[in-house]
Image (tube, rainbow, N blue to C red):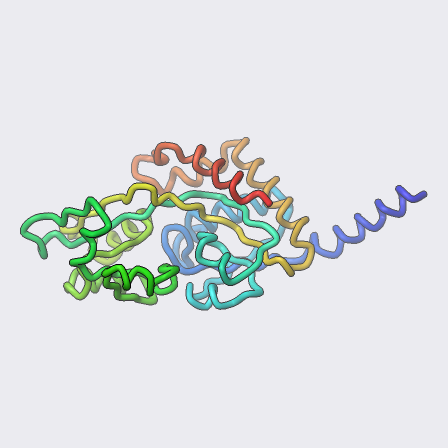
Length: 262
């Protein structure tokens, strides 16, 4: 009788949230998150496939990054490092990985910038997306110079105009932005992936979100399901040149999943 009572309580809890829509917030960052791309971009496609496999209804809302970071009661999509200092999460579920690259505009240099150490960056003004530099003051005290913008498009326009010397951006985001802004000038821009810059892209469920633990479990199960049946790889491959995932993609994904299991 006690077992039946517990089962009825569990079913009641499931009914209370299974049909509700889970709202996740993302910053406009094509090709990961975008209102204009088919399927909403790589990240959006993964989230919807995970949700379908998990039997969840998920809606993605697009919000400026700085506002996402300041909001301490929402569910976020992106790099957990930007949010964990401000907000507590019931679950962080890595669903993809990204790498940061340094971009520069070739016509502004007789010789390519030689960036082999931290000190080499001190002579340049570096463009970054507002909100992505976690401890700006500490870096500036070390002699680095930054200029922030609210949008990636603004960063790369400043790069071409010479208002910044270098741009730090997620590699695939930077490539997509240059293809949109300067489609006939591909060879005028150079990108250099930064070592040890691989980060997770995750679903983050707020600690106080109703039924957060159960929702997170369903997302994890959905992710495992689409990896197992091949849907995951088909989605990600569409967004990379020649359909080739970066080396070590799944190893890095598993590493971050272990890191954020709590």
